[in-house]
Amino acid sequence: MTRIALIIPAQNEAGAIAEVLRAVPAGAVDEVVVVDNASDDGTGDVARAWGARVIREERPGYGNACRAGLRATEGFDVLVFLDGDRSDDPRDLPRILAPLLDGQADLVIGSRVLGRLEPGALPAHQRAGNRVATLLLRLLYDVRLSDIGSFRAIRRERLLALDMVHPTYGWPVEMVVKAAARHYRIVEVPITYHARIGVSKVGGTFRGSLRAGTTMFGAILRYRHGA
Image (cartoon, rainbow, N blue to C red; front, side, top):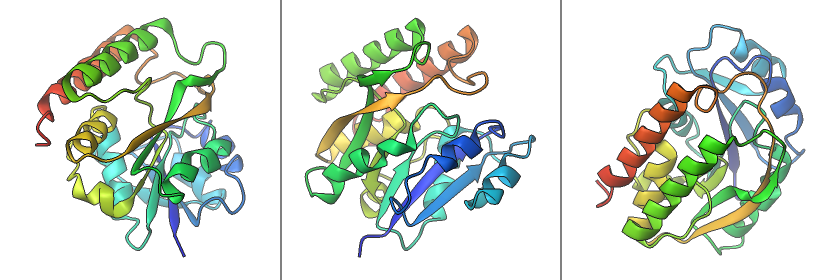
């Protein structure tokens, strides 16, 4: 029996996390783990009230939160990551999991570009940064993707083999680059992408977008040889 854990990194998402957890299809996963990433708004309390297992990661950073979720899910076979701001739609879980469970992929990434975008969900500057990142991946690694979204699924043993280390926004790119270096089969599936609840920590400001973009592009170059 394949055991599946859903990991949701969340920093100050008290206004959104209940809607995210409510949308998880019954029976789609065996456990939901919310990683409360140094929140000060009660995110963990809300998630716990909705039945999630909550762990606390005091070191801020998306990658730190994802690694905390990885450490907390020993004994699970498949891990799914999605954001806690309601932008990713948990109802797409069966679609994300299908290629992995059918043995057709080693890493499945939900593509916002190929799927349905809610108006305002992906601002122009984020689209532009995404296009540059996917172009670099194609030129440097011969990986053809339309998107580097955070909604993804991978077998736990495969993820452990990647030796993930990036503490912040470079985590999703690091996973793709290292997976490509190890010749993992990377498959995209279209997903629905909503306008997030609240102000985005990444795309909500020009400074945040610039910082995240610089981090992502740096990660593409840094992990070129799987280091």
